[in-house]
Length: 216
Ligand code: MG
Image 1 (cartoon, rainbow, N blue to C red):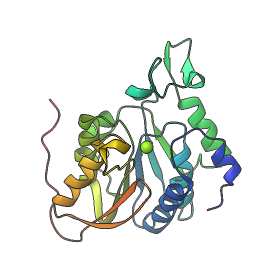
Image 2: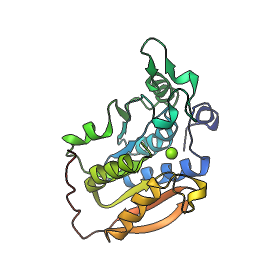
Image 3: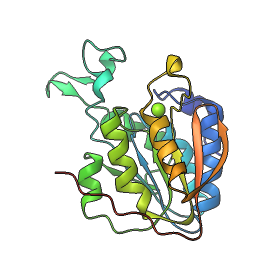
Image 4: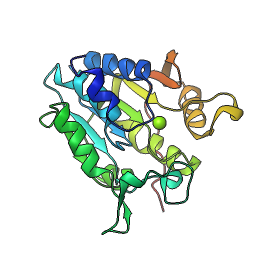
């Protein structure tokens, strides 16, 4: 991992150092085979770890975010941060901070930002993926849509990684844990040890991913 702790600490985000290093290791391992993709770039903290892993193999990280903030990051909500608000647009805009993080981490030739909703990005997607990191909207609907849209693009042996898993409802929202269990119950994934709230599953070599019904 060759991005300094100082740079990473200067980037806003909700990712623990240990979780970040696990992301780096997984990306460094799997990106020799296929690109990685994350849903929920925010200000770029996880992209620094995943991107550094991909850069090792001259691979690519696709990083999806509309950069308008999630429900709980809007003005007046629990996780609102005034520094992410664009007065001119009258909306949140975390993309400038994300670009700045990529520049600081020298990841502009590794990370491909997709500034759009994850469902739009998924609509015509056809590239097999080595790792999918789900850390986008935390409503049940958003988490399920991300799981159904993206996990099916994983290559056999690829990693499905889910952030903010709280088996105890008193510790946090249940949507990430719900899709984690859904993936496990599909029989298509093997469970790996968690790192704090980071769940790690690996796509089995056999079995066909179900086709989910498209959004209506
Ligand atoms: Mg998260």
